[in-house]
Length: 375
Figure 1 (cartoon, one colour):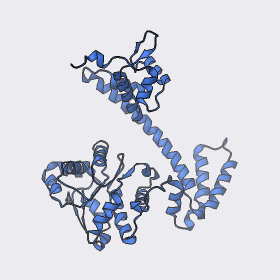
Figure 2 (cartoon, rainbow, N blue to C red):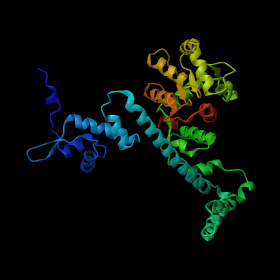
Figure 3 (tube, one colour):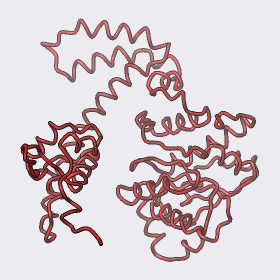
Figure 4 (cartoon, one colour):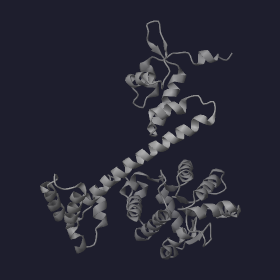
């Protein structure tokens, strides 16, 4: 006989047992606070007046923690978890989330300005470091009471920039000082990541790029065997290092082979206008390397073909641009049993995708016997 609904949700957890069941750093104090603000319903009480919680309370607390970790505010979480009888609650919540997003964006701008200032200080190569010390010394002597922030910044950069015309920039020296500790990554993977950062000028990219454990090995094997490199649009194919691909015996082609495709919008429209591109995608030979840098729908269709076992690429470099479809396609890609290089965000683009493939082919030619990725 099946148990009744009331027996399935019968209180059985003390507040301590609740926090242990939820985990994720939850404390009894946090639980009591959530009761006070109405995010958690008041629990039943034992004869000794102890709070008692059910399995449903544990699940609700886990949902709260999951949404909180995604960055949602408690007031928004409360609305999300409230029973909704119609769609009238959705629009006000979306408006609130838009306001929160704009506030976060302003914080990111301020943090980006701070990071830019630190990059200007820390990213100096050896030839500039004497001026770096001199500029910091001068900064201590500036009369901040009589100068605006803009004037202070102008004086600082005037000193720091005094030596940049004397020599070329040492990019590797700058990256050594700015990148986090990536010593656990294989040498070739680190080389690809460094070149991607130099292509976009954003050191923060290192926190979002993801390589599957077998990505480097799969790329080198496919390139050695003279695979075909398939780009989603002609602009990506035009950015490939074609002389090196010729040297390796590889070919290349664009899935959306239309010279009128000049960006993300036209790429998406072209893919959706006809089903011939879907048929072409599934007809391509096994073992190709895909370089997707524009159209998220191409990556989505590619993931669908892989999931249904209609296609098995050697490697997918999935870096399309977009703010909803692209991140969703990248998350799907990382769940599939296929070697990949992608990002856990909207960051991407045709240049980044091509740079990743170009560095993989260059490292194969320069270091054909390197096995750092097998460690």
